[in-house]
Image (cartoon, rainbow, N blue to C red):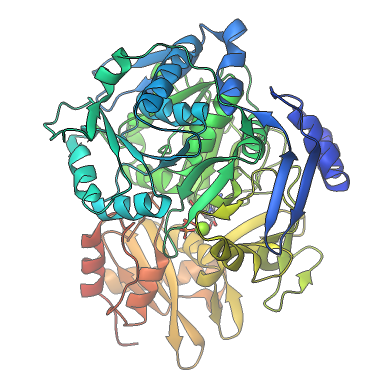
Length: 633
Ligand code: ATP
Ligand code: MG
């Protein structure tokens, strides 16, 4: 299962393409199955209908917990770092985690949860969140984790879409110096959720909550009523493991469905190989478990490998912008996996916050979620990895279950802003607007995948047609990612942004990520977002929203000219923005991604209907941008 050299990568890749069933059959031998599968793969992308490990029986928690008990029982499974650094961190060994999971699985059963029932989990980043997720998997209930920052309306929409029977939540959450009520928000959501019969509430912040008789019960009280004896439910490889709603950068959130067998195999395989995980490593993924990154690379991938996974409850900028580095130092973190948005934000605070922290334990750095611009890549490499830690820029999506295109740490030669090469089993193709495959190197197009990998989306919950429409109908016979991509002369892949965001300026196709990358290289620029708008002559003009370190008010025109010069030099005059609006913030999803569709509406001067803004982090930012929009050309 483990790749150690570039030669081995090439061999594994070749094998995986020539004989996918042989390859993934071998990888799956590294897991514990109750019953072996009869056929490794059956698929078509028309319906679509993809099945891996057909007839195989397993329980993912036996692979993540039980099988480690004999030799790793006393090793840390989860290290929890609380919001407040002066409070003690908590370590759960594999034995302790197993015990907690079994107990909570019994609590779920006691409260009427049966195999196949959906359970909504809306919790802060505390160990009990991971416990609740695994407890669902233990008894075959389907978890739907909703990120703790979502509003009542968003929770209600997700609960109703999945028809959840039970909600697991907490009295409150701590984020920096704020206490956020969670149970209150759940109460508001539940006014419109008739399917919910029970709410289990964890005590965390000691925020006052109302407990409705007959519906609401306390986590702690329930845990006292049960034993730690809970055998795992036998699941079919293709039984549903979880539903997860996508981030909502581009539209109405979709309930992506993943199943037990393929998801387990693929997340464990990619965790081990991409990060080159070694036993004893401490893995710190800064995502929230409410996102796919947290599902696959905080919970399932690491635990299936018997690794130590670190969960952090707080925010990167509290008590100050050195918090990540403090955590790395304190827990001797080996692998740090974070997002470009976090790197850019911490960059903006300057190097003083990095100094004084010992980062020598770090071995591998990762990035995920958005294209990482060159400046952020180098800052991460120079100041955090000290030029000795490989950076893995991992490209993938909620719908993919695990990383698809990425370097293998220390094995694949990296190139800033490039996700580099496909992992074994992943067959990317670039296609043009007419669906014709673009062969060769030094080309760009729309990124599709032409063959299934084990953790590909199976359906969108309750609406299979939507799954077909969204991913499998644009280019018949292929999975369409929605992302634009460049394959350079070396065959390396670089994601250039979402296809909807690709600009067409005087007939030239330019990725938003490319222009942003160039703008961000300019001194004093913290972050930028670029969109197109209708332009009489060019077809599309380029509108750039730019955040600067200092207020550019009086020097604005000079700063604009300088930015244009930088873009001209880096990409060429064709990519020069027609309009530059200086802003103090950008509209982002709760997972930290720029919502370009809102910026596009503003640039087009059409602010009457901004579309679904339920996943927007800070609506105030949008109002400010609208007020300062540059309407005339
Ligand atoms: P929605 O599908 O609801 O619009 P979303 O696409 O933001 O939301 P995710 O599944 O979390 O939801 O994100 C996947 C997308 O993130 C990819 O399609 C790609 O655009 C972007 N992305 C993720 N990782 C990378 C990366 N390493 N480089 C470039 N882009 C990335
Ligand atoms: Mg998406």
